[in-house]
Image (cartoon, rainbow over all chains, first blue to last red; front, side, top):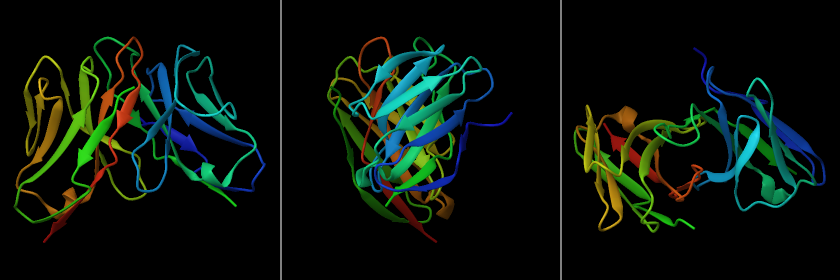
Length: 115
Length: 113
């Protein structure tokens, strides 16, 4: 089975622009989470979706939004890009939100550069 | 919220030596503690995890220990190999119904041949 896939791999945007990042979870996984990883730091939680509903939100401004589709794939949208949004954006999927399985499996990430 | 501190930030060992990375957390209700390995240009890979109802878990050359009283957990890698070189992250979740993990800042492990 394929792992978590993300697109695009790399992206260069200009300040003020909008960006959409995409993620497809492991087949059968219904929960998707998004993280921002700045160089030299650990991933920072942005959003979690389960069964198309937002179940968790990190400390990020309203410029960040996300959604999950009926096939459990997800999009992360960032408006009015700032230089500080430059980072690796990671998507992780898991089979359940709570209960026995917390295991998250990460995709390779999308490297966003804002100039 | 949860606060996770990870030490050391860098660790350099000779091939065959053991490596230990330690994390402390603040939320006493946290009950799941994963460790991830991240190689250059890749996403984090789950390598081992432990739940709060056990004190130790092993998987071949890697092990994780948990001390709930002291609120710390550690990753142990024995017989290190050059391919173990990577950045390792620990994480601990906020308590509550959703799984929202806080990650440590990472440990860069370098294994010299």
